[in-house]
Length: 99
Image (cartoon, rainbow, N blue to C red; front, side, top):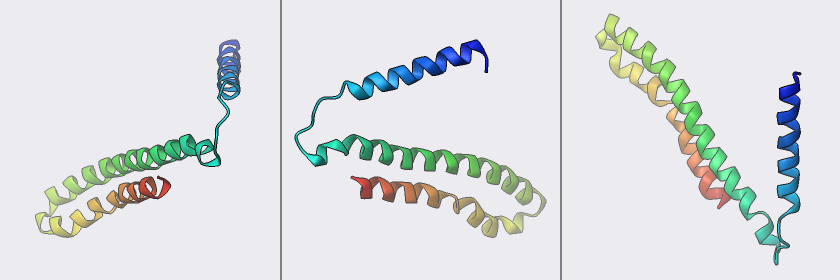
């Protein structure tokens, strides 16, 4: 680990520690986890969308190549292109469940 990496890591740890200590006292137990629920919901939808984008990019390029060779397979191969979209749907469900 280089000296620069150690400085960045130490400053990141200190920044996170000071922001954690600077929070105000909450009035109820429900307020304690509202921010964490929002972060979790955002991560569920965001990471699901990124994963879908990566998967559909690879599948789409293969689909175009396969359809160029045999156009009669376009309908059946389109199903494989749409399967990763379920990741976004699951992320959307998690978003509403966590709210």
